[in-house]
Length: 317
Ligand SMILES: [Zn+2]
Image 1: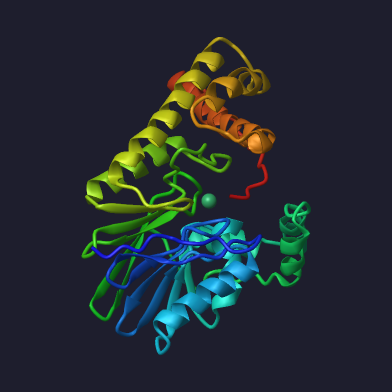
Image 2: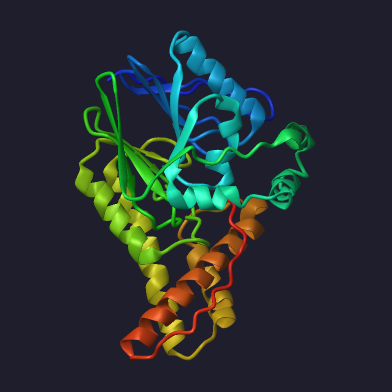
């Protein structure tokens, strides 16, 4: 299997070489926000996720066009609706975006306020912030609920809804190449972003990924791994569920559980000091989410009908 290692990181935005995982199947791990990929077919290119930072999205497009100058862009698959995976769609037009129907719902609801928050999240990186003055949201043109299969040339790209990380999360499975783009179902040596998660679905999604028998998994963030990498994030989620249940059964409320548990969760993966505050608040959003799940499960088990109004938070990974 030909595999080219990423080489240089250039400038503040980080541009770097693509990596070929199987013939005509590429990823790029040098961008912020996600690890995008693309699949060459005789009829055109199928893209998976789009970089968030405009210069990186344009670099990615240029790399694809350099490799296959005569191939049209057929589809852009978004594995979820988060900014890191879908905000760069505008740089690949006139491609048709395809994603789960819930991604359409979420992305259609992105307002000026959302765009402003995206820009503000780069306030310490003015060079990047300045690139984000013309955000155009491109929601999916085509949606699916459970599965869709893209059949172009000799390729088969199966889009499978798995949920778990978000109610829109889907994976892209290439059975002939044994490569699976697993989106944010899989986090390697990082705390998973769980603020919009459903942990039971998530655990099932990890099982499903293992059952596919893929040789290579492309996580939504970071470099490729093998299927054994799915266990650790599953253990993390199970551990959080177990500890939240302990707290709940001891009669602690959501806030007590969040502050009581965040330290234990932090120890699971290394966190650089400058990211500690952000990761802590991300973990607390996850605990918040899991607390409501456990509460629902325990109330159901006790025959109590839950009055869960839900308190939505901001989602950004
Ligand atoms: Zn995500």
